[in-house]
Each structure stands twice: as C-alpha cells, then as structure tokens.
Amino acid sequence: MNSIISLLLAAAVAAPGAPDKGRSEPVADPVYPAYGSPAIDVLHYGLELDWKPSKRLLTGKALLTVRAVKKIDKIALDFGHALQVDEVTVAGKQVKARHPGDDLVIPLRSPMAAGKRVQVAVRYHGTPKPVRTGQYRSDTSTLGFRSAGDGSAWALQEPYGAFTWFPVNDQPSDEARYDVAVTVPRGWAAVAHGRFQGRKGNTYRWRSTESVASYVTLLTIDHYDRFNDKGPRGIPITYWLRKGDHSQYLPVVRQTPAILRWLEKRLGPYPFSSAGVVVTSDSGMETQQMVTLAPDFLTPNVVAHEMAHQWFGDAVTPRTWRDVWLNEGFAMYFEWQWAGDHGSKKLESYLSDARAVDGQLRKMAGPPGHYKSDMFGASNVYYGPALMLHEIRKQLGDKRFFATLRAWVQEHKGTTQDRASFVSWLNNKTGEDFTALIDDWLDSPTTPATS
Image 1 (cartoon, rainbow, N blue to C red):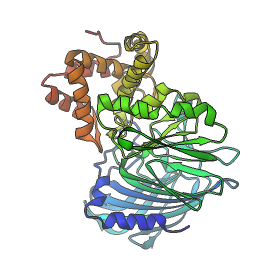
Image 2 (cartoon, rainbow, N blue to C red):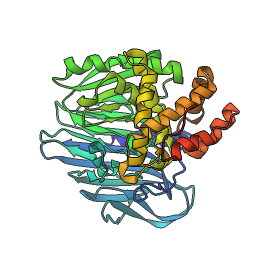
Image 3 (cartoon, helix red, strand yellow):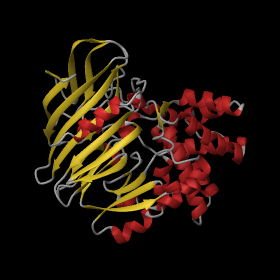
Image 4 (cartoon, helix red, strand yellow):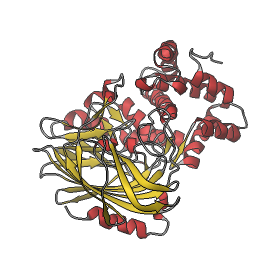
C-alpha cells in the first residue's frame, strides 16, 4: 500500500494546534469496563486498509497519535484476537507488543509524562471476527467486522466492536479525528465515516475533521454506486446503494435534504460538513456523517431518527454508556415529531403509545438511567427519556424548549457529556430546577406521573 494516511497525518500534525481537535478526557466506562483505557487519549487515527474479498483478508496499518492522560509506562489498546500483529513502532522505533485476547499492550522505552504525545504504528493482517456480546437484541448481539459469502463486509460497533478491525481505545469518552483509506478490488467500493475525499485508483479516502467516538465509526465494502445530493446551505450528501437497490431505496434516501432542513429549523445548523446514507448490514446506526441503514430499516422515519443523532450522540456524545439515554431519548423524540408532521399519526399518539408500554419496559430492562447491562439498546432508553423531554417542553413552552436544545448542541459540540452536566446546564440555562423531574424519569422503576 502507499502512504496516503502517513502524508495526511503529517500535514495535520504540522498545523498549529490541530491535534487538540481530537482531545478528550477519557474515563472508565461503568457499564462495559473491559473496553477502553482512561489512561490514554487518542487524538488521531490514520488507517490504511486493504480488503481482499475472495480471501476475506484485511491488511492494515494504523497510525495513532496518543496523548498520555497520566504518567504511563505502556499503551493499552483494544484489538481483536483474530488479527495478527506484524509490527508495532513507538515514535518510529520497533517494540515488542503483547496481544493477549482482545488487548494490545505496547511497552514504552521510558515512562511517558501526563500531557505528552507519541505516535504509535501497528501493522496487521487477518480475517476479522465479530464479538459476541450476549445482548438481547439480535443487531447488538454480534458487533464489529462481519463479512458475507460474496466477500462484502460491514462493521457496526455500538457499544463496542471497533476493535475487531483496528487498534482503538474503544469507549465513548475518547473521541478522535480520523483519516481512512481503503483499497478494494475493481468494481467494489469502500464507505467509511466522515466526509468522502474521493477515489484514487481503487483506494477510497474518508476524513473526519470533527471528533468521532469509536462506536460511530464505520466500514462497509460492497458493489456500491454513489449518488450525489445537496443539503441545507449546499452541504454535500452522498448515497451509497448496492446495484439492484436503486429503484427501491433511492426515493427514500433522497428525502434526506428535506429531513435535514426540518431538523435544522428545530435544532440549528447541521453540525458537520457532509452527510450521507449507506445501505448495508442488518441494523440502523448513526455512524458519523454517513448514516448506516439495513434495507428493513430504510424508512423516512428511521432516516429522521439517525439524522437527529448527528446532533444528539455524534456532535454531543455521552461520556459513558450509563447515559445512552442522552442519545436515544432525543433521537426518538424527534423521530416522533417528524412522523407526526408527515404522517397520519400525530405526536401525541406516539407519546400515548409510549406511555402505555413504558412501565413494562422499565420492569424488563430497568429504568433508563440504570438499565441492565445485557439489555443495551432496549426501548426503555428510547421511550422514557423521550417522554421526559416532552414534560420539559410543556414546562418551558415550545419557543424556550427548542432554543434550549439548540443551545445544548451549539455550546457542547465536540464534547462528551453526562447526566450531571446536562442537568446542571439545563437548570442554569432555563433558570428552573428540573433535577427532580429528570431523576424521576431516569431512576423510577415505574412510569412517573405526567403534568
């Protein structure tokens, strides 16, 4: 492979202050503590990947810019056991790393002080294998890189699973910038998160200049055709559809500009420099700047849900998986609003349906703020928090409510947040105390009373 990513990374690091755009303050995740390390902060990932469909062979080079959060003598990353490590270098010098299970432990020649940075390069190859999570949902019970019999491949990884195809600090509190180059055979196409930078030969290039959490990264390879579109203010949009899918799915994804305009009226400017939809996998996911939708999920309502996530989840990300409601409650609420404005069923009807099942969801999966760890993504973290938002809306009134949500995104874009920071900010911003209301909706084992 050529050194596209090395050149891009060198240019980015040379720019004054550029690496700080990927700076985070990682914390240990309380729900899935086996993944991620709060001792390091990855600022940038440069990925050079090559996929050979006939052999199911992935060859990769990952160049990471790593900042020490505290004094460390090693760098610990998440990295799939199915992949073989060929070489590891630290600051250009080869080291002998250990690869026990799904961990990659890279020794440092001398301790690294807090705040210092170093470049780590990992060359690897193999046939990636997804991780089986034991989650109740079929689309989250197997995560990470998967390939089909025809050689096509896709990788979705919420809440974790990016480690199945590249070495990563696989937790939501460590966001980073990305440059991704994927080489595929002629006739194939590779789609990733970020903004499409074009194709040179059979290499597809993608760049994320805004911070990305590992769970909203994306890789999918298939016989795609690309369609170009424009969103609000000329934002470039690309749609990637498999051959034979055009007539069925293109009319749906072509509604993306209208959906984005509708969302912008309520939430302010779309937070990224590009948007898109790719049809693949067996789920729907708010992969950053390039929404991923399986055919069974491809409806305008779901497109609206995943696009709302670009504000809630992608632009502002939960610090740990305890607060996934910060993603799903907001996206669910705006999906209902979109559907209510564009269908025969109104918002209040969706709210009523949700209230009718919320109690059972809490009994099955736990309260939204304390869900059972093997019930990740259950509807309890969607419905209850969406109902909570409606209660806040009723107290604030429409004008103040939407102004508050716009401010939340604009003031926190590119950061990770949690329940405490949201409640504190909301109370200060509105001059009202929503602490008890939010605690009730997130912690109660039964559905709270409505006003």
